[in-house]
Length: 171
Image (cartoon, rainbow, N blue to C red; front, side, top):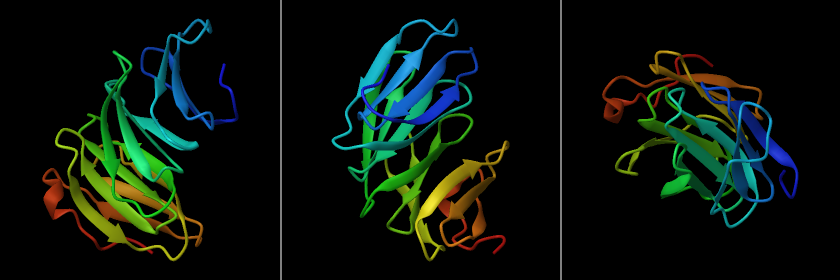
């Protein structure tokens, strides 16, 4: 298992599990419940969140080290580090194809990243307290954010994400 508290658990489409822990690692587990198949290590401080593409290709994890780390799930190898947050990353989301990454946290900003180039596409603010949840809609056209301020905000993420709206759809 993990060496500290588990902060994330999710099922991959093939039945395997991905878990993230305060021990600074992600682990991939077989569908039959056996021992961990792979450990993904790289965070320099506690890991707080993780998400993965529905197609099982890419995972993103965030934490106290203010970074988002990208992982190739099949090979269990690191594929990038996204830096730009000013404090703890509390939540991440990966679109269904593993092309877009969203991250947010205690610095009150939502950052949208290109998973291939690792470039920041857009950074927006809209919450008055820490952002604690992010989710892409099933068609990847909307990103929802949930904050400690009690607000849920919806943001458009069109096919060309560089025109991503900085205006929430709802307050």
